[in-house]
Image 1 (cartoon, rainbow, N blue to C red):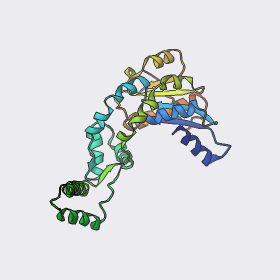
Image 2 (cartoon, rainbow, N blue to C red; image 1 turned 120 degrees about the vertical axis):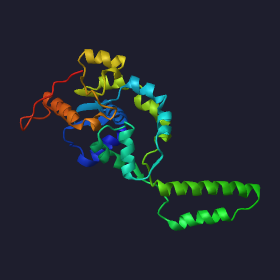
Image 3 (cartoon, helix red, strand yellow; image 1 turned 135 degrees about the vertical axis):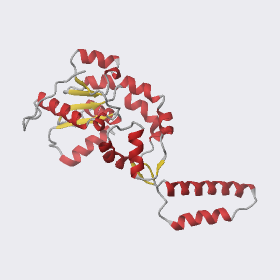
Length: 256
């Protein structure tokens, strides 16, 4: 996926890309780090990673499947999906949830064709007493139940994260040292200082990157407090002279 970032930049700008700063959250932050460390974007100026730390990420992987199983598989409507994301604490900002959840879910496949549903029903009626065909009829009945569920809950997750489990370790293992090794200005935004692992704690004390903690946020820091994240990124850009302030913008002093 890191190579995909480089390919997209090349496809858009050719051999002369403009100055670019990569910003990524969670797994997206891991991809941004791998992209920067591999020098896949030659015009890269800076790197911002939001609430992803190797130590806590690796610890969280053990319970990730349980978390995914605990999520609803389907939703009655987009409004229902948005309501769940806020009530569950996944996103703490209703306005942000109204924007981001639309892209995280999709309409269930196979619910718009009445003929398809009819054929399933007809298949169930034509059951035989033969064991093998009886087994097939059970499968058909299950498909019919699934179809009915989709009719009542026509929205499901766009990406089945559980199927990506074999890649999880590779996304995060060694991430902290890889982040520290990137030879560009770096910003780490966290929801809590307790998320730092040993390597990043040492690196932060040595001044190898800028860190800012935004309290009272969940894991989706950029959604829970978009204005504060924008201020932190703008301050980082100005501090490193990647941009000039306009309109009387006041830099926010980083804090932890």
